[in-house]
Length: 157
Image (tube, rainbow, N blue to C red; front, side, top):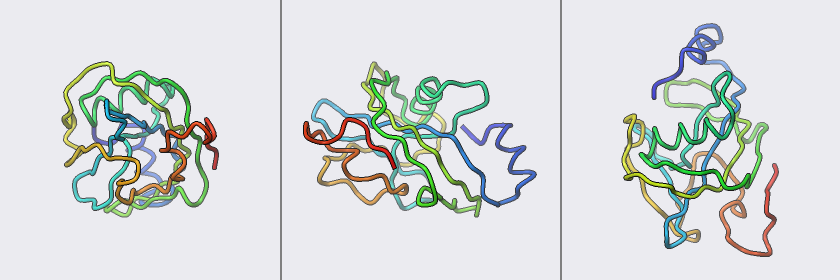
């Protein structure tokens, strides 16, 4: 989905300047345990299905909406796997819009759906093994993606 009216209005006031953005992201695994990443049009780096939380929207509802729009999959958030924010979660889009994300990352299970970009944002959708993941746009710690029983259940940064 294109930028919401709320964020369009903020951008109208801030221009390309830095916006703090509450957001959600999904770690979605297939039957083989591979992790779904998306690559958006005009971007070279991959990322998790993710997006902004809209006013009045709960994080879990935002997550389900964003995942469906970007991937065509309906998911259930199973648990919070990480919460991240701060300067290293700043990102500049190709149009020079700057954001600093505060991200709640959920481990999700697939309920149903066919893998495809519903809103046209994603150019590629692909599942990757934990040890074969490409560089991703947001610098989540590697331990977020590990299914190691010794790894912490929730990662904070």
